[in-house]
Image 1 (cartoon, rainbow, N blue to C red):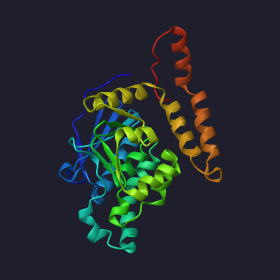
Image 2 (spheres, rainbow, N blue to C red):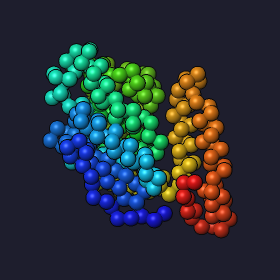
Image 3 (cartoon, rainbow, N blue to C red):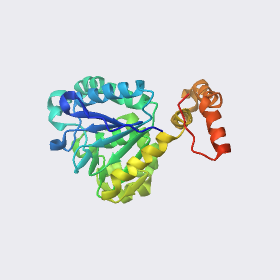
Image 4 (spheres, rainbow, N blue to C red):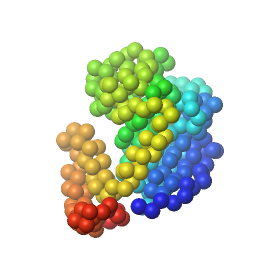
Length: 273
């Protein structure tokens, strides 16, 4: 796979969201380090804009989510906006409408997403990480859901995703206690995929992204779709979409290339078609 030079980061949401790409790998940075990358309404909308552009780019195969600086991935929602935008249940509904565009775009994104976690990953930040396909965290990371300490409630969708990762017993512990856990504990209960030494985090994530980007895009997309559909209730699954994704792989030029490369004992060159 041809790899181009790293592009200059483009700014969104007044510079609080950044997007860059290197070859087939895109990087989205939550860029509010002075607030531990707490996510504002505008940042959610910027995230949606970036994801829409990344989705439309056929050359981009993997996306990394990360936070600016060394202290946080995302520490949660921007509490400075709570009084004005989340003061009561009606205000919360409006807040959900404004921020839902970002969550919907992330949930619908068809390409693999890796959360590169360092430092605090709390509340809404953990919800973002849980929407990623894979979560790799540095040893100095701290994860948790402080909703019970703020008097608010996690969304049904976020709790369902939490339960799918760690099971109901661990979900109850995190939600009821509001305590933070370290990366080792997060890996033990299945909240993250891997914990690595802090100084190795970027390299490990970059290597993983490169490995995924070199694989057949249609195969990876089919796997992502199948995993996502199988976490739903049977009545809510789109069996037709699953079958179409599987058939697209078997009918693809990449499948022929994979067989030929195996026969010729060389690395395959997949084109995503």
